[in-house]
Amino acid sequence: MPITGKTRVVVHLTYPAKHLRTPEFFNPLLERLGYDGVLVPWEVSPENLATAWEGLRGIENLAGVIVTVPHKLEVANLCDELQGTASVLKVCNVAKRLPDGRFSGRMFDGDGFVGGLKKQGHDLSHKRVLLLGAGGAATGIAHALLAEPLQELVISNRTPAKAEALARELRQLFPDRQVNAGPADATGFDVVINGTALGLKAEDPLPLPVDTLAPGTVVGEVVMNPDITPLLNAAAERGCVIHKGAHMITGQIDLLAEFLFSKTGV
Image 1 (cartoon, rainbow, N blue to C red):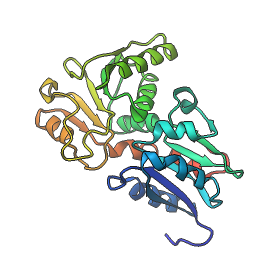
Image 2 (image 1 turned 45 degrees about the vertical axis):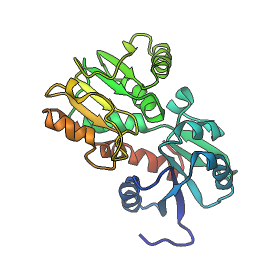
Image 3 (image 1 turned 120 degrees about the horizontal axis):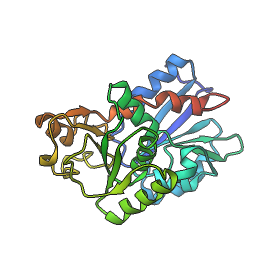
Image 4 (image 1 turned 60 degrees about the horizontal axis):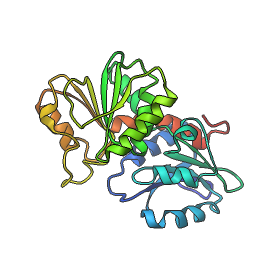
């Protein structure tokens, strides 16, 4: 893909950057769709995010930013407007730079994750789902899961108060659905999703006791690198069906490209 003076740039904000796999999916897609653009990783620490963001406002060939750990909540606060799920949950994973330097944010993680599950043949109807985490990605995934006919969604977080707060917020948005906070225990669940960053580092602990996983349970990840995380490896050894983190990005890259590069957005 040739890069010229007309190429529009998308910055991927993250910290650290070495785990990123999105460019390997996104850049070939832009070329196939005929968009003159390129995605590049920017490693920006949380303490430097606000300064970097202000600088991005003046970059006139910037199409926008894609956002991942640990910036999804803070970027939502830095955006000038939020659309769709992002406006409800105050979290976003992509922001489009408008001609006047303002940013409009969207959240596609949830749609991408659930879409990825469906593409892999996993039916969520009448399933009990355990979601580990209550941060940016997990919040978006929870919202998208509740658009499906689940039996129950249970949210677990290492800070229980955050899980309780998210469950309470979701019950207000989906009053007819069963949403609760609970422990990181997979007993009795059909689907278990790691919505945390645990697994990015080799020394990370597992997000739940794997001996609570039953054979046949679908175990999904948001962590894309490594391709097979320690959780997925342990789940496979116990006879579970594993669902890689890469499916979350492949389930949403078309939405990201359309939002950032089409004239009408999504």
